[in-house]
Image (tube, rainbow, N blue to C red; front, side, top):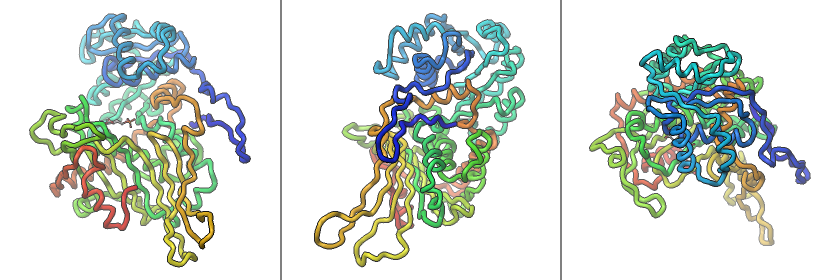
Length: 508
Ligand code: BG6
């Protein structure tokens, strides 16, 4: 699951050269056919096509593979190529662009216009665009609203396009609650085996998120401290400075809890809290994550107001820029949708009993910043008299400025007694690595082609996450929990700070 692609540094500090310095350490994949449903949509244009282009330019994808965009729009192949080419420049910039490489990559691209609920002719056209080699890996990527997932899978089956080597990729959100997620799992499961279903959470493809596994299970130092014996609390923040952009109609029906917590934040929580898996095989890792989800204490009408805060951004400034409020952004007079959520969670098991896990995420916060903070307990007894001792803290900065920082107390040098200072051991990615960090989708798409399910969610995981989130939604409804406004450019409403100060702590 994890490529050992970090530069080798021996313990004396001298560095051994490694092939990965050139960014070329990867496993090549066999030729494949990949069909993108929603091929003209936002995800395909911003993420999927650029990711495939980069894997092609690095030589991981060969010229015999095919990438077929489909959507209802009537495009010729050349129009489609032009459309995704323009989008590349718009969203990915020019820094990693190479004209010759793009034109070689473009030769892989094709387009089929297809109305999922419509004529057989469309499905037949898709069949024609696919390789005749039935043993070749076929990937069907569903970058479309989840209500279409089951129909597309059934359409593929009816058209005879599902071969033994076919895989389906489902984008989040997988449904809108437990019931709809279960229905999707069952519907898709009637066409594809569980081990051919790739449920994407792109956070799992991020370098620093994968590094969580290496940090925890590749080092002996942390494990003995990784529990309620030494940890006071954990904090997980995924902050965004952007607003809802052009996604208002989707977002207003979802909100931060469904859009971010049900998937990205709970996955981060699982990787932080799970037991050591027997191996990095998909099922070993997913089973451990599932145990964490099942041990999450349910949030109910009795405790929801003490353990959750929901907020919505109002007009304000992010940096120097004045930002409009959420209602203006989504073009509505009224909306009770939360763009910020903070939760005090508990994992009811031996390792984590009594350790609050604070999670928060929001749009239009002060800056884009995702961190996992492990706050250790104070030393049991201080021999330094009245001198203040700051407890150790581990900060895993997921993005941007990727780093792992471990804060220590050390003696400030000099005469005049014992003065203490809190300083970090700083493992900054920028100082240690020079490779281009592949976008999460590059890694995940290649894992689909290679048949590696480790970084994808299993059906039961998704359902367990929904069950926990559904309880919160029901409790909000039941208690009519207030939506607190916060100014754009602030880290959520004051109530999110109050929730922690009641516990004698604050967000880092
Ligand atoms: C998506 C959410 O899954 O993740 C978006 O739907 C959010 O609302 C995005 O902006 C954040 O991803 P990243 O990779 O930019 O942190």
